[in-house]
Length: 346
Image 1: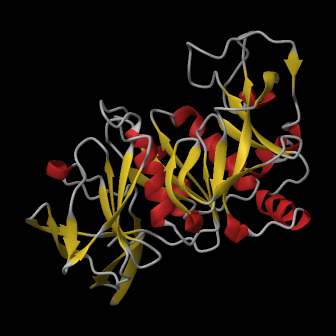
Image 2: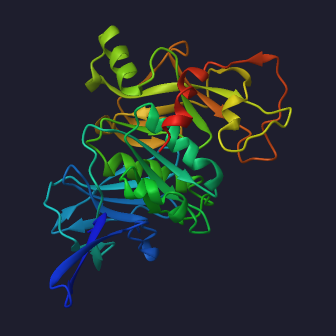
Image 3: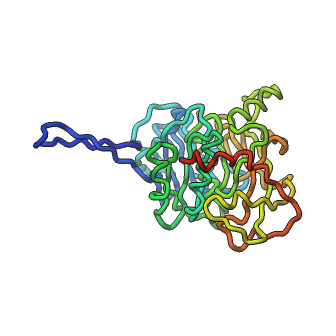
């Protein structure tokens, strides 16, 4: 079981009292079973045991105490999600039968974010821009960030230390291959479905990348804006699986500075992309399978009009080989959200 703060209690012989110091677990480790290509086994906030795996091999038959796991399959051939539908209390070690083999395994338990708006993303060597991304979105109402570290180094542990200590960031070691032969971009899809199933009782989970910034047109808080959209349109939240946001590409053809927050002052852009690059705030209780840009199995996606809400995609950020397109379009509307960012950053 993961404890996010460990208390080290030591008796001081000279002073005659106990001292308590805090030690934060910087990076959480999924439970990996290489033989069966299992990426993690965990007990979620809905009292289910969940097993996440890429679709790199045949479907597994998994059993716990004579109860078979159900399986949700990605029709894009990315991810298996095995679910023990019977609700059970958490125990940190269980005995499973996998393809007739008895397996003793630990079970992870992640922090719960009931009714919170959180972000989940996978990162690969994004240290230069991740702090800005967290600060910006924390400022507009994202309460917690689940960061799956796919990098080859461990520098994020230091870069995000203050956010981890403040319980704003949960850092998960996700060292799995980003691209596999059969299951494609499975590191990302396993990450997305991992969060959707681990944090079922969170209010919304934003599945955005580090170079994507929410651009609120009418409010400075995402929770307030989404609630206004719900109220104004008389939306039954139980009938939808996500709020889908449209994409707008931003480019840097003049090689302007991208240091610190400078890239937010680059306004050269394209038209709104109407199809193929959308991102979502999913409602996890209404989603069974997700794949990068869309719900595969679950309730319908609701597309938000871009005059109300969309996201800026800084296509050039941390990528020297792209994002230099020249256009005649300018959009500086993100200044509405950026204006107080620097002085109030964490």
